[in-house]
Image (cartoon, rainbow, N blue to C red):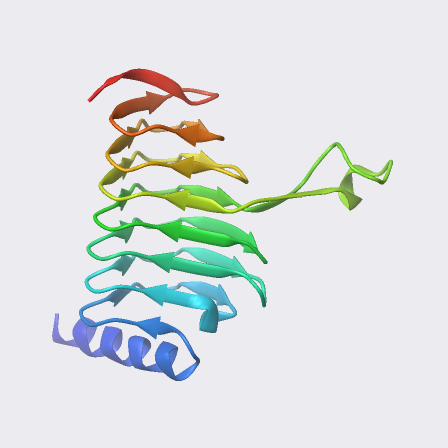
Length: 173
């Protein structure tokens, strides 16, 4: 227990020295992989649990609000876009955030040369079940529940439970 507290304190200090903005009482789990950690902002009491990967481009950013957490084994391909997670958000294990992806439409006949980019924004007081996938351009308003295994794209309005592939409103909260 004491070892974990010391390790976390050192990791947070090292991240701050590398340019990350880490508020008090944050937690960074083991085996986190960041590119451009200087583009990370963590508010008070936020947590990033173990075995997660965050590919942040030189112009991209990742911010997580107060009392929010991302459970283990998350994957985020942010690129030069923004991934914003609000306050009091719980994100389940094995969730994926794709801000930058190959796309079938574009100037090239080769799919691997066409890209789709977009910001992903998750509001306050949101619960996300395990293994959800967030696609470019997604906005989730405040007070939303997203069921496990949902593929989330577009604008999710406040006050609903969403689920499915593609993600659709199931019922009001």
